[in-house]
Length: 254
Image (cartoon, rainbow, N blue to C red; front, side, top):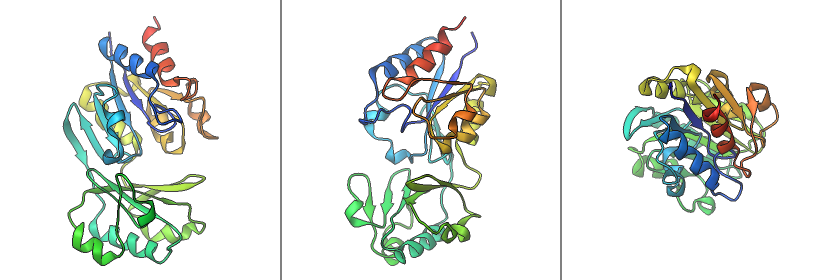
């Protein structure tokens, strides 16, 4: 039996709207692994933002996080790319001139925000670039997200550093040379699984490269408009355990 490698998005895919992982998804992941398949998370979240209830819901074979900047397979760090320190400083300088907007610098061990009121849980706030320079010079940061900024041209000085994804209510930036597809390819090679046996399951714009590169592309029933064009088939919604239904469909096919 040639194994599949399943690459699962988190938000809108593995997770239901209530923030929980449906029990059916957990059971299907465990069944797939018991039969020799691999199951990995492939997420726009930085690794530090993958909370323990998600990390511990199943014995995942690996993690592709930060839009492909941070790759871990069976506990081994395969790839780690980081935002250059001065690039982070320039981003902070930009957002401190737009106090109505929020920038999040996300990473492997810390997440940093420009908004103190919105910096609960796994985020710490910085109040100035000088504070960032003093306290967080060694922070491992590999992805950005920010609030919706009406004038996208403000990002033009950063387009050599980041590929931007402009979602309806927020934006996110992947380090150049990183995305979910490249991360999937690196992880699959490490596992010895050819791309035609890679299954990508996702729901939104930042899944497009992953869905296109995978041998089998599965789009969630709650997909963002336009994502459906990448699908080999569309599964059920996140709330109705669409991940489980897709996994079982594939591993039970004769």
